[in-house]
Image (cartoon, rainbow, N blue to C red; front, side):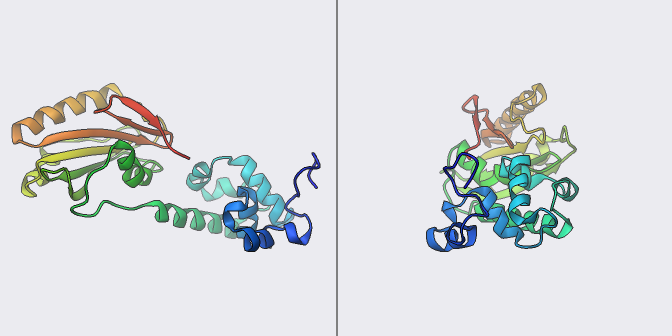
Length: 234
């Protein structure tokens, strides 16, 4: 039993071990540390899979933080070698891809949270800024997704002319812009606000309506249309 006498530990009786509980109750019944122990198997050195998994969960209480950690950072946890770190990175990358569901051509555009879940979660972990445009038809259905610019850790150079060039070619009547903040904070900077104003003005000139500009980060997103931030759902 655990120290408080209430919960079985990972090393508990055979029927309470992670593998048996997963078979009996499903993966949803297991804590993060138990799932990590199954993933590590017998490979964790010195402290065992259960001990290494527990220390991983303590070091990275949020799986999103574990997903973006480097191999060397994961290997700092006792019992985690390069092989185990690669297993963790691969498993979390697969989980991230499962969550991704890009907009299909002709699909109606949802609100800013839908944009964050469908595109923002893909951009938020990146260590450099990326600017993406969703081109829309008259009924705000998606025509295409376009990555229009990439920059450094703190900024990205965006030229409004380039952003609207494909929109005009695709006969888009609307566009929604998304870009990420590697800092983890989606709060817009003064430069973001000024850029949004320029984009809205440029869109009016070419007849393309800027539906929104959504800033995304690990912590959540900011919608210029709604004028507010929202936290990421766990």
